[in-house]
Image (cartoon, rainbow, N blue to C red):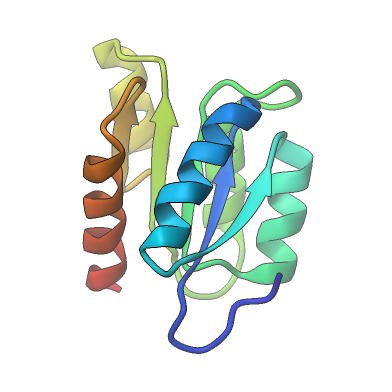
Amino acid sequence: MEKTSKIPLTLAVDDESSLLDLLELYLLREGYHILRATDGKTALEAYTTSKPDLVLLDLLLPDADGLEICRRIRAQPGPSVPITMLTSRSDKEAKLAGLEGGADDYITKPFSPRELVARVKIALRRM
């Protein structure tokens, strides 16, 4: 799905389809378009072809490290999009690695869907 004017497109990347369902439910309710990816390869393809306004990215993907996907997104030409790591890794080292690796925010699972939506709004408002 290509983004349309004034309606933000979020690329949600996670290998858990139930989590993607939850993200989609809450973000659609807020008026956002959602593009889903369950692995790193699909995420990079979706990012390149759709140019989302925001990326929600899991660290642990079946075919790639989320940090590597983050770095590859950051290395692409064009404007920088907000990237939020959304992961079960809650240790300080993982958080620091995510933030130092290019993420703008880091949310640990389980999370409050309302908090996630609030953080998405904040990230997009900064753009």
